[in-house]
Each structure stands twice: as structure tokens, then as C-alpha cells.
Length: 304
Ligand SMILES: *[C@@H]1O[C@H](CO)[C@@H](O)[C@H](O)[C@H]1NC(C)=O
Ligand SMILES: *[C@@H]1O[C@H](CO)[C@@H](O)[C@H](O)[C@H]1NC(C)=O
Ligand SMILES: [Zn+2]
Image 1 (cartoon, rainbow, N blue to C red):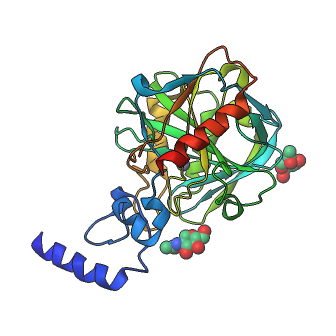
Image 2: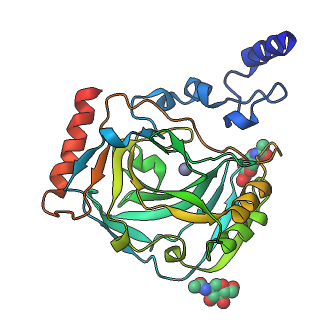
């Protein structure tokens, strides 16, 4: 143990600027990658005051009637989509015709990709927790505000990215449409490999917006380096289902860029640092949506 620590210290002196970032599950004596506690040394935003994910304390959320439902555009259209193992997770690339507006967001947003965070060997792996509870898996759908074309362009806008998060609950029955996704993950086991899912419809895996009235909203960041603080987060109250069998298969297939099993791919929860988490009211009032957005803004500015 002592020798290991000594080696680690030596290695970290030499690899300070070159180490690759990784999740805690990858970090070991043989692989001194930069684990979440050390992301900020290379990616300063990761040490900022508006970081994600967070633990949502339901007794402390501010219920707000100015958080209306979303309008999903193109979610029922059929596309051939590509999935790629990015070394830390697998990204499912969405066409830009999949868009959204509403939800008290300031504009239209184009979908870029979706991906999942999971645990391993029976451990839950969601990034957001609710009253301290971690869920088995979490889906993130990343959207970029129009007219930005990339994360790099959007990162200077506090609401440049809209991230939709769905938490999964384990059920006995299979989710009828997840096997397509799981099969695709099985075809991209190694870093850099990719595969096509024909005839994919986003509406097969998430409910229509009319069934998603209730959600949490806060301002935060990307949960992987560079941790850009440009994200309007929406965590839906409604969970998605996945069977134990499906979950077992999900966590067993992919490998990190290091070749180790891709498990426990979530960042630990981050301090709120004075931020307020809002919750929509089931029967939303549409009028003061923009007003609320500026409210969220000023709370953050006051606290920074
Ligand atoms: C998907 O790919 C198939 C086979 O390559 C092609 O025939 C079909 O037109 C494509 N569908 C769409 C919606 O692009
Ligand atoms: C992982 O794959 C990407 C391309 O998708 C490549 O740029 C990167 O160097 C690979 N990493 C390793 C360690 O092989
Ligand atoms: Zn994510």
C-alpha cells in the first residue's frame, strides 16, 4: 500500500498535465488516470460553483407554477441513428430535426445525442440522486440552443445547453423498446467502435411531453470534463422502467478506453453552492415562463 502510494506520487508528478480523465471505478495503482476528485486540476470549470449532478432534496425544492410542459418536435420521426463508444460512455447521435421548446427555456434547442449513466453488479448508477437515493440508471438527452452549432459555441451561455434527465426504476417486466438500445451497446464494446440503429424513434424510449408535466429545474454543468457551466437541467419526476435482466446486460457489455469493464459511470454529486432547485406544478400557468427564467438567473448571480 505504502509503495503504491509512493509510486502514485511519483507518477502524478510526471503525468500532471497529460493524464486522461476517468471515473473512480477506473482508478487504480496500475492506472493513474485523473479521477473525479482531480478533474478540476486539468479542467478548471469542474471546480466551479454551478456543478452537476446534485442530490435533489424534495423538502427544499421551490414549487413554481411558471414551469410549463415542453413541446417536443420530431420525437416521433423515424431515423437511422449511430451509436459510438466514446471511451467513457456510449453516445447515440440524434439528428438536428429532433428539437424542443417550452419548459421555460429561452428559445429552441436542437438535440445532439443521448447517453446513459449506470452502475455495475447490482449497484445503482444514476448521476442525480433524490433525497439521497441513487437510481439504477439515468438517461441524458443533450440539446444545444439555436443557433449554436456545438458545445464549444454554447458554453458561454448559461442556458446554452438543455439537458433532459430521466431516472430508471428496476421492474420485473422488460421495457419493450430498450432491447434495441441494449443490442446496439453490445455492438460497440470497444473505444471508437460504432454501429447503426435503423428505424429509431425517440418517442419509443421517452413518454410524450403531455405526460411529463412534473420536473425539477436547476442551473448546472456538464457532468464530464470540461464540466461547462452552461446547462439548464431538467430532471423528470416520472421514471422510466428497465428490467433486472436488461440492466444486467447493459452493464456487462462495453469497455472503457483502457479495456476495463465500463461500470459505475457516474460523477459523484456536487455541492449546491447556494443554488435553488425548482419544481414544476402539475397544472402549470404559462404566462410568466420567461420571468421565472430571469429569476433563476438572478438567484445564481447573487450567489456567485
Ligand atoms: C435507413 O437505412 C436503410 C438501409 O440503409 C434505408 O433503406 C432507409 O431508407 C434509411 N432510413 C432513413 C429514415 O433514413
Ligand atoms: C478512443 O477512441 C478515440 C476515437 O474514437 C480516440 O481518439 C482515442 O485516442 C481512443 N483512446 C484510446 C486510449 O485508445
Ligand atoms: Zn450524462
